[in-house]
Structure formats: structure tokens, C-alpha cells
Length: 555
Image (cartoon, helix red, strand yellow):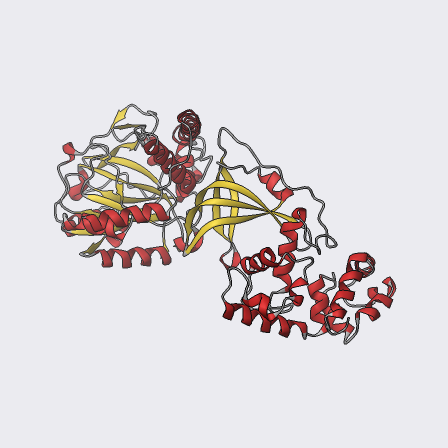
């Protein structure tokens, strides 16, 4: 039992849901009330107008976030009860389904249940169908589980729902999912497509009947049907509900469930899914079904492709060229196999356009090469304070020399010149450069060349052997080709132009005018002017002389 509890807590933490916000009671009440009001507005739009103003994944994650906050601050988590938008009673209540956090919780549940079957969790709109003497007499929306809307007229317009049936189902109550029909839908590749909202909208728009032709039906429950699942599936198939037998499979272990779950996630299906459902064929009689009482079945949902993360802070970084970029520090979330705690928001202009502040909830996904990105802001906190970005006074010609104002760009220049394409000082990252700068107070970005072997071996925070390794690497860098050193200086020259230069010296570069630079590949008139300005800048004059005194080739 304790193993299951621990793993459950770990899963909760991995998904970024375990840490409570550091809020005063007043602020907590304000933020919870604001998010609750927004969720209520989304509910009203969805259930009463068939409009989805936010994707299903976003809604589910924000709804879970609200419940987390309520648990954190001692409030009773709000119940997921749809707005009362119908007065027609279900003959058998919709129970809903408990969602397990992962395989271990599923294992615990399976220990106490038998005669188990797995089905895809079809993503659509739940419905009750009532057949009497072989005729469809009533179709009722799920509503709050006990009462719903009369959808009979609309459902009769759906070709996949039979008006007349015979056999054991001639007098029956069925529960199932009206779904958007798809041809070869691969969930892992194509995602949810907001299918649930599309179906809900089609059922709400009474004037448009063409959309009903795109709706299919998956029966997932036959209250008071045969206790033996094979008999139940055979009768459903004979009545025309063929999908149920095809996608209801026996399982006996969590490993089997996991394997089938992965198969349905990556295989072509005729519907959108958001997970799987494991159910026992041994069900209580329909009169005992109540909302929230479905103990004989559980759902194991897929991990959303995009995750909601809370913004803890907004940070600013100055790159080696003086460009200011904005980074959002996040409450950790798991995206695929990556634990994401920071995401680059780009320039200050893009950050201001996105309008992101600490406390906001943002939707994250993985871009090409698995790089986290912010897709949009899905919830802005009630009390929002945005930090002020640093002044835009940094350029390609600033911060070659150390100063408090230049701290960020200065370190960025050091990291750049030590990188593999430049001077290739391997094993020395940002923290290593900060350690050296703090110990020896660099005057400029090349001051490390003057450090002696003894100084490096006695650097606080570095071992003697590590210091000796750095001395050898610095000496190796000293003898790197001239083209690498002009790259280390940050000369704004395209690589194609660097190759075309050939072997030259700094003095030869100074003698070139804008027109001669313009003749090199990739160098336009404006770029040529900036290169001349860069090379003749007093700061570069001083650094080039200093490099010459250190014996660096070409200076």
C-alpha cells in the first residue's frame, strides 16, 4: 500500500501539481475565485451553446489546477457537475469514471476486480439511448449524470444510430459516446483536434443537419445487460453496434493494459481518444448506478502533448551581441521525457506581446528537436505584476570590459569564445567562467590568457588538477588560428566571408574599406559599414594590441 502511495505522490509531483503557491489567504481566495469564474463561463458556453472556448486538455488541466489550489488552502475541491441544462431524467444514471494517475494505481485497482476488459476512452459526448419494443424512443445528453437534455430528434438524424433494433436490445438502455468519425486517426500524431467540442456543437445547432452525418457512436455500457461480456458484445454487434466488440478486449494484468494503451495511442483508429478504460464485466444493477459511484471501472488517460505550467518568475538575459532575451522560470512540468523548468520567450517585444507575468498559466509544447516553447497564455492571474526589463543599451560593441552593468553580456562573451566553434576551451561552461572571473577579477574578455599555471591551480572552487587542465587548454587556445580569434572578438562577419578571407592579419583587416568588405560573400552594404566600424572601434584597437602582446597569431 505504501509503495502505491509513494509512487502516486511522485507522479503528482512530476506533473507539477504537488507544490502549493506561496499566497496569503486573501490572495488565494482571489485567485481561486477568478479561475472558478472562468471555468464556470467555459462550462456555460460548452454545455448550453455547444461552443468550446478552450481545448479539452487545457480545460482539464486548469480544472485540476483549481482543485489543487483548493486542497492547498483548505477548501473543499469543487465537484465536476455540468450546469443543469436539462430536465429529462436518465433511466440509469451516468456514473462517470475515476482516473488513475498511472500504472501503479491501476495495479492496485485491478487487485480487487476481476473479469476485466479494456476499451479506448473515446473522446466525444456521452449520451443515453432508450429503446422500447425495438424503437429508439429517447436520446438524452449526459447533463449532470441524473438529468440531461432531450436530444432525441437530433440523434435520430445521425445515420450511425439505428432507429430500430431487434433481439435482446429491443428493450434496453444503452450508454455510449457520440464521436467525430475519423479515417485512420493516430492519436499520438494528430492529437485531440477538439473533437468533443465539434460533436457538441453539431448537436446544438438545430438548423444544420449535415454535420450529424460525421458523428459515430460507441456503446460502452449496457446497464442490466448480460453479465457475461462475450454475450453482451455479441448482442451489441447483432444490433448494429459493431465498434464495441471490436474495441473491447480481455485483460488480466497491468502490463497487458499498458501494451494495449500504447497500441491504441499509436495505431489508426476511427475516432479520437484520450486514454483507455478498464472495466469489470461484473456490474451492479442499473438502479444502483449514481453519479460518481462507478467503482467497477477506471480510466487511464494519455499524457497531454501540451502541458500547462505556472510561471514563477520572468528573467532577462543579455547575449554576447547585446540582444536582450526573456526567460520564464516555471514550476517544473514533464513534457514527454523532458523535465521543463525554463522556457525562452524570445525578445522583450515578443514577451510584451504575449503579456506573461509571474502567476500566469501557460501552455507548453515541444517544438522541433524537443525544444520547449510557449504556445499561449491560458490563464492570467488576478493580481499581476510584471518586472521591468533592462535598458536596451547593449550592442555588439559593449561589454568587452568587465563592469557591474555589463555582468550579463560580459559572461555571455566568455561563454561564446570558449565554445567549440570558436576557441574550443572544452569543459568550461558559464559556471566555470563565473568562478574564474570572481577569483581573478578579469579586466576584459581575454584576461584569462594572462593567468599563470600557479594562479589557476590555486583558484578557489577549483582543484589543483582542474586548474592545471585549464592552463593547458588556455595555452592551446592561444595558438588557435587567426580566424578563430576574430570570431572570439565577435567580428560580425558571415562564415562564408570568413572562409573567403584566407590567411590575414588584424592590420590587413584594418586596411580594408567598406567596398572591399562588400565584395565578400554574404556581406551587404550595411553589413560592410558595420564591419569597418567594428574593426576601427577604440575598444577593439586596445584588445587587438593586448592579444599581440600575448603572442596570439595575427595580432
